[in-house]
Image (cartoon, rainbow over all chains, first blue to last red; front, side, top):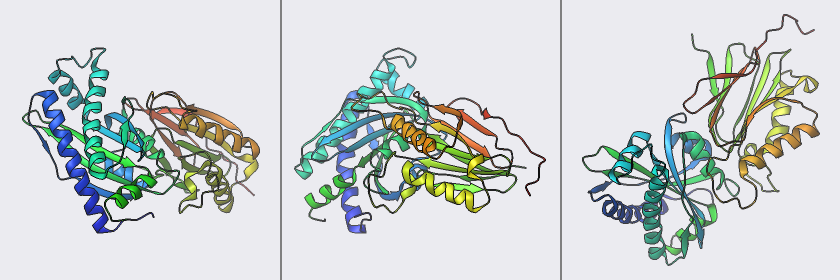
Length: 195
Length: 171
């Protein structure tokens, strides 16, 4: 299967909604500030278009990536503009040029990503574990295409579940992408009774 | 005046013989931007390769695999007048963007090895590279002059292969 029906995308969007709601609560607890979420998008796009949908390929961005292993394989990717990454570090009491800044961001990714995944796993009755986070600041295109390459072997369409977490009054946002491997999407849908 | 630029996105390829035309892949990570150049004819192709081997997968888009994209680009280049014996290759990309625990080789490194193996088998020399490492890159190819530039995040375009204009007119 390479394309999804509107009903299936709606169901995936709802999963993403609940997942990002849980993730925003976790981020809010970590930062001690309120965090809003946008209505998530669920898009099935050919690879060539998926990178463009994520943003300007040459924009500099900080990416925090977690692998997913277990009943469903895939990748969670958090994209943060570098000024916002600096703000997140400061909210955690770490200076952005400190040697611990990257691990502080990795930890944010870990907590936000894990809570999203745990919500997803408990809703679908699957066992999914996140792998430790890795962080890079580089071209957005380079970060996103490297994540998509992991899903490219078994299909030409990337399913991207995209949410935005916005830290209130800080003008700071995190874009959150879940890219399941092809088999992972089918499994998600079958657990929802929509395969 | 800005030159006409064709974006070669993930899993795409393009060939051209149009003067003033540029081919570009923005923000290559683990993917490889493979440029094939026929300087004499002012013909160039660019493939944005995602994975090394198709392993028999029947796909809607075979161009994302090195083993299927390269033969296709060769035949398209020859179709617009390039000569295989004159082709030169430039490789950009194949980075390891994330320092994740190495379970087997990184896909970026495997992409580069696959592309080099295939080029060797069709006897096309690799004349310039900007590969490996941990940084993303942009490749731009000027079709008429065969000039190839590369840019890393936060950097400027730098010349990877000098352009040249030949006065020789092909018979």
